Every structure is written in structure tokens, then in C-alpha cells.
Length: 248
Image (tube, rainbow, N blue to C red; front, side, top):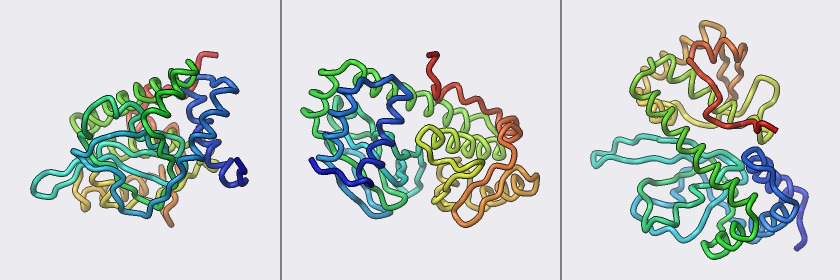
């Protein structure tokens, strides 16, 4: 297969992210790279890749762009329950259940790979390091959901928003999407409000409070954290649940 430089750089994000979970063998890297490039797809912003109730027969792995998992109440109210970033999969083992229990939507234009169930199972069965990496990713996603539950149930508005900013920054770091103390922030205030369980007015007021303290700058779709340690203290944030670093 002839690969462009841009194709290789996109696939490398996935390899880099999974390698944080488990050190991948060279064979696993090669097999995964081929499967990702074979299933390359693109989608525009504000599109549902899959909706609640849909059957699942493949694994979607994000190569570029931002997505969100969400649920909607009958009256139209939406709760974002997680973000999905480049290098991450959209529920690697969701096909084990008959239908999706939530929806996944693009927040920006995205490039992703769709790997059919049989192909994915063949990949993971043939290489233990790859299988363990995807299972570790699933476990980390569960840990993220627990933190988001604490956000909604116990943290103050300022702690919620600060915690979300810290998490985004730390999740983007392993895939090289942090530039010094800055990272892209291509989401709207409505998205942030739906992710933190706040009204847009309350969310805006909270962001302004973080700005006023000098902890962050949020401008031109870029988040700059002036003092990451201070922001973590304000958020009561510990990155341990993200499992970003292996003991070795």
C-alpha cells in the first residue's frame, strides 16, 4: 500500500496513543497501520457517526478531529458524557453488545478509520499487546466516566470547568497535540456547558472567573494554561485515572 506522509502522521497518533497503554510489538504496529489506512473515512462537523439504538458491527478509530459521546432527553436536552480525541477509538468493544446506548457526533471535521468486527477481532487475537492496549483504553474510558460523574455530582462549577480543561490538556499531550502550555479548543461554549452540566450563562461566568484569576486564556479556539499546577489545584485534579505513564 502506497502511503502519503499525511496518512502516516495521522496513523502515528493512534500508534502513539495505544503505545501509552501497552508497548506494541512491531508486528502489531504494521498490522494496525494497514487496517487503519484500509478503512479510512471522513466526516464533516456536527454529524452523527452512530446514534443511540443503532447496531454496532465495527470499531471506529479517530485519526484527526474532535468528537463527543452524548445522550439526549425526550425534550431535547443534551448531556455530553465524554469527548473523543485523535488517537482514541469510539468504544473498541461496543460490538459485543447488540446496540449503542448513546450517540457519537463530530464536533469538527474528522478523519477516522472504520474496522469491521471480524477484522478487528483477527487483529487483537493475533497480537496480545494490541488486544491489551485496546482493553486498557476501554478501562481508562470507564475511569474517565467516573471522574465526569464526580464532576456533575460533587464539584463546584469552577472545579468542573477547571477539571475538564486539565483533562483535555493531559489527554492531548501523549499524541503531541500540546504546544508548550497551549492546545486547540475547537468547541463552543454550548458544548462545554453540555459537558459540565451548566447553563451557557453559568459556564461563561465560570470561564471569565478562571480568566480573571490569570489561570487560563481562552481565545481564537486555543486554550492556554498559564499555570497548570495551580489549575490542577483549583480543580482538585489528579491525572492518575488517565494512566498516561507506564511503570517501565
